[in-house]
Image (cartoon, rainbow, N blue to C red; front, top):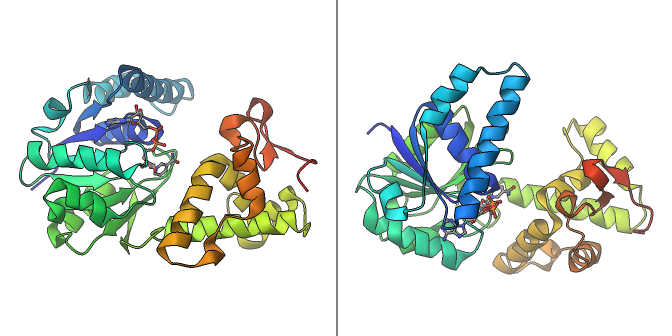
Length: 295
Ligand SMILES: NC(=O)c1ccc[n+]([C@@H]2O[C@H](COP(=O)([O-])OP(=O)(O)OC[C@H]3O[C@@H](n4cnc5c(N)ncnc54)[C@H](O)[C@@H]3O)[C@@H](O)[C@H]2O)c1
């Protein structure tokens, strides 16, 4: 089987980026969202990305038009998925919502269609069970912003077939991504390491070990991380990070994964990072500056 036609479910931050890359890969790409405004926002963000590429001289109008002709917004889920070779789901991180989508996918897609989920923390086996075709379901964890980030973390659960893994890896490579293969364990490889580093950095900040910028600089210059763990936490969203830590603490029955009280307090205050203009750093007008009211 060769992948030629795909559907992306959910046109938010991740779904729009995934659909954009699928269209750029040359695949006919249906983009579905349950809400008209969600679909419109997703299509607009793809258009803006391509327009920016043209203004920077990184792409041409001709190229953009070719990519755009592969991209088909669709408000009808059954119609969007019925004759595609691969579906990638990127709806909110709530098991009931994903399970409902996968139930429909299990009934309405072709028998050999690959069903990928972009979940960042839920069990792939639980999502796969809802499809009734678990051998075809695989975790396809992309990173934000999808068109720029090169990693695709593939997550296999016990019932995932070898052919599904092979096809997902091949698809990822065609999309220009480097794939890694990870077992279906809480936090996979990336989220588990990422949140622990971020949580420890917040603990160090709270203990007054160093300023937020200096902790970040330690990892940037000392360990060649492109971005410090505190800045990255602010970019991902402190609420997202808090939820993943709680999920890990419960799944592993290990309280050392629990979010630090400073992280809890910031989330309680609605200071979630860049998206709310305030988190571990100030982000007024998108520009990062140190806070001096935290510790
Ligand atoms: N944002 C990130 O940095 C990031 C990174 C990796 C993985 N993820 C994962 O990707 C998934 C999506 O995250 P996001 O940040 O793009 O979310 P988002 O909130 O930006 O987008 C979700 C989209 O899904 C739509 N939607 C809601 N219910 C739906 C349904 N039943 N059917 C179809 N569409 C529906 C919404 O209208 C919205 O457009 C989540 O599982 C998240 O954990 C996110």
